[in-house]
Length: 106
Length: 124
Image (cartoon, rainbow over all chains, first blue to last red; front, side, top):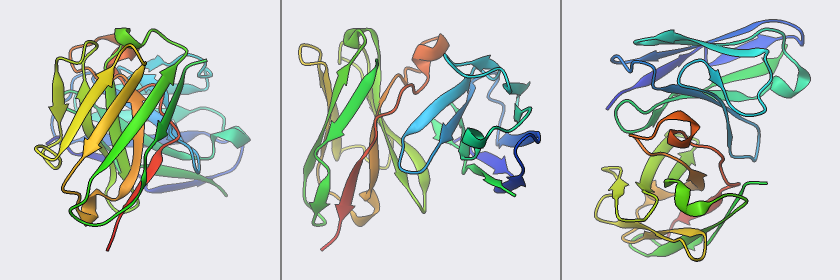
């Protein structure tokens, strides 16, 4: 099973600041990585797929990068609605998810 | 608007059974793989099962293989998860999700969108 490790567990930032979230895979997953956002009481929302493609309706302040085993989700300037939990997910070998990074208001 | 609405969750004793349903709307249902994913505070997110567009292919996580069955009815735009021999560790919020085909390219291979989830509690 491919294990995804996300860091940090919690990111405390202010609106307008830049957020950088990391996801590391236990083995190479090529470009088979997605990022999701989850708010309390809701299902997940697809943000990025195939590393760097924004899903429909996702604003340009979200971007993804990386390859192989190391991936990054960047939010260039945090809006109030961006404070949430973010998960990475791979589908190189079946499907596994990272443990999540909580982006909270500082 | 694409919508997935789960139902059927509830409290069940260990060893019991439960059938989850998911009603889909707003898209051409038989054009997509469908999946179930569960979430717990302790174990996080876990893919449970998926099925292809026609329902002829079905795959399962090792943790549920032999106990859960995923099925779909394209005439009713619905997907189901029959859960038997339930264990305490099966307790979770179960999400119905569009997508999840490993060999499918683009967004259709990923999980999008997700339903609101249905809570399954396994306890005596």
